[in-house]
Image (cartoon, rainbow, N blue to C red; front, side):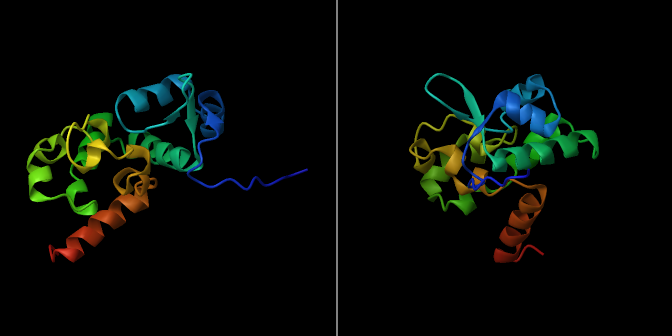
Length: 153
């Protein structure tokens, strides 16, 4: 008997072992993606990782980029790092100039420890820069939208 769960896509409910089974990949690979800053699972006070359906979608996109498109993990981190997060969350010039994500291009903004500015008080999992980039198509659409907003085409 098939049953449908009514769970919001951003609700972290899957353990790391369940996520790995659903994605048909190893727990080790999920931990590697987390260690590399590509995914931010929810962590309970006990340290247990929980994944949402949005996280699983993001991981599928990453796995596809690695296995089918032959993009390295460093390449994926670079793609995420060049997304102008400061435009998405409307950082002030001051915040931007003091932000490592603005100054560097080696990892996504959510992988930095933001000590000051708007990002120092926001949880990265719910920030639109992270939360809206769940699927590969969303990444491209956000870049397109930003380029249209600034007439880069």
